[in-house]
Image (cartoon, rainbow, N blue to C red; front, side, top):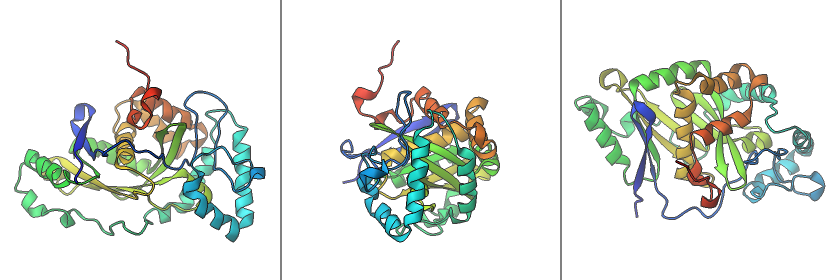
Length: 312
C-alpha cells in the first residue's frame, strides 16, 4: 500500500520537501556512528566493541554493525586495535572538542571514492530516466511541480522542487565547501553522517562507516537536476537510500539540513560549513546540534516525551 506524503517548506524561498509517511513510528533506531548526549556531559564516542576489555560497550546499536566489526577485527587486528585506542582517547575529550583537521584529511583521501554506492543504487540516474525533459520544457513551472509531486506521490522517498535562485546560492557554496557533517537525532543522542558532493549528487554515509571501515559507501544519495533551471527557474531533486540503515523520515531530516546549512541567509550558520572545510580546528560539532535544535529540525525522530513543548 502506498504511503501518504507530508510536505515541509524551505522557508520564504517556497521550496517544498516531501516524504513518505511511515505506516507507524519506526520501532528500532539505526546504528550510531558517533553518540552525542543531548545535554552537556562527557562525550561518549565510537562503537561498542566485541569484548568488555575494549571499553566500547556504551553504544546500544552495535548489533547493526557487528558483522562489519567482526570482519575488520579478523582481517586487520592491528587496525581494529588502533581504532579502539583512538576511541578511548576521544572519550577523554570534553563536549564540543574537535579533531576535525584529522577527519578532513581522511575525507580528502577518500573523495575519489565518494561515488561508491551499495548494490541497488541506480547508476547514472538522469532526469530523462524519470520523465520526458523535452515535454517538460513545454510546461509551466507550476505544472512541472505538480507532475513531479504526482510522480512520487506513491513512493516512500524524498523529493523536492528547489527554486533556481536558491540552488544558485547552494551551488556556489558547494564548489567551495563540498563536504559537511550532519546529525540525526536519536533516542539517546545523535548519529553523525558525512555528506560529500559529487557533481550535483550528494552522497551520505554514517560516520561509523568511515571510523570502522575506512570507506565512503553511500547510504543515501540526493540527486539534483538543474536541466530546467535556466528556462523554468526550478531544480528538481529526488533520492535513493539504503533502507537497512535509513528510513524515509530520517532521509528527510538529512535533506532538510542541506537546505539549512547551504541555503541559509544567516552567515553564522554557513560558517559551520566553511569551518568544516577550511578551518577544521575551529569546527565544533556541538554547534551543528545547536542549529538543529534552534530550527526544530528532526524533532519527529525523537520519542515524544523527549521533545520540549513550545511556549507562547
